[in-house]
Image (cartoon, rainbow, N blue to C red; front, side):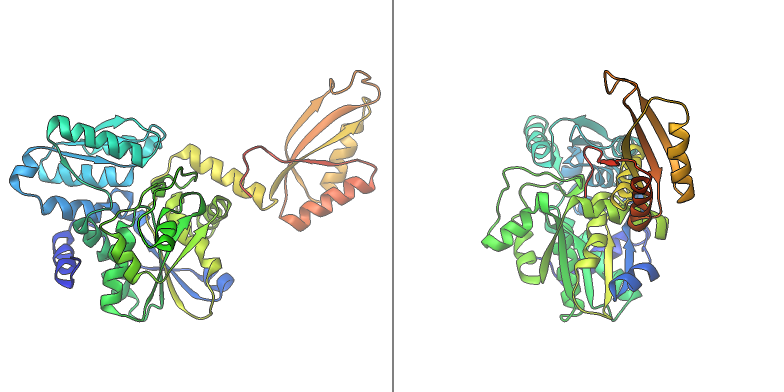
Amino acid sequence: MLTLEKFKQAREVLSGVILETKLVGSGYFSKTTGNNVYFKPENMQVTGAYKVRGAYYKVSRLTDEQKSKGLIAASAGNHAQGVAFAAQASGLKATIVMPKTTPLVKVNNTKDYGAAVVMQGSCYDECCDIAGQLTAEHGYTFIHPFNDLDIAAGQGTIAYEIFQNLPDVDVILVPIGGGGLIAGVATLAKMLNPNVKVIGVEPRGAAAMYASVQAGSVVTLDRVDTIADGVAVKTPGDIVFPYVQKYVDDILLIDDGELVDAFLDMTEKHKMIVENAGLLTVAALRHLSGAGKNVVSVLSGGNMDVITMSSLIQHGLINRSRVFTFSVLLPDQPGELLNVAKVIAAKQGNIIKLEHNQFVSINRAAAVELQVTLEALGPDHKREIIAALNDNGYDVKIIQPTGVYS
């Protein structure tokens, strides 16, 4: 069982190994949400995520015989690095099965900790099946990423640090994938203060724990569809599920588009890189009721590749009308492009890109297409620019990029 003694032991084992990540107050989110918001930055943790807590504690609990067999784990990245780190620190061999879509930074970091990586499967659940097959073939010791009480106890040590930094915390927001993190945090938090509210946050496209709580038993989803790869789990853990049922006060569901906005906010306002799974609790801040509460948002990790970061920033700017593209049809004659540019300049729009297509019509004298990508200050500024173009006789059509989350 998850007991106070078990949490204390986990804290002792982890002392000096992990970082005690200090809470970071957020003036921006406090002002915009009406609560006193603090971040628990596990994105700054050793290995870049909270997962090292549970993995290291679990490995410390293994027998010599279990250690001698070598370790194996299935993971979308953060548990992989946690197990690899723990194995390296203990002089053990580790094999990690990761989805084929895992960001390169997570794959390379796992290899850097000395683990062998097998990239198969499209999601965690498929990787877990493959890891089970390899365990049967080679006799490895399997380290589950969430459905294990030692793992949950290690993750739960986060609650100790939250209460040390903010004894009068009212609400703790925790991302949910398989349930190990929230089971540990919620159980210990309620032991320390039964009045604290622990709220889980899941992506709407992978809400397996929400479905399970509603059903009263563990549910397996047919599919998962979310950009938050770290929590893309079809089946939550049955061992940790009772703790979620007992100690978690509520579960909020977040759309992927909200994660895009949250990434932009964290990058611009806090200069922090937080991966999509960790951004769940940032997006959830705007869904909380009440005012003046001390709210801690657990940022579970920050392992994100540069290409994904670039895509999120671009999508975030588009969502907020700070970048947009429009097209107009112009007569194919000198000076028309300059006239459009003058209208935009008069409204302080910043042109990023121009495309001039002379082949949109057979009758080039009648029309050519001009596509313009602009940087604006937001929705109001965007409307001003479009209105000015319309007033000058241009029929503006907004072009929405494909794949944009909004």
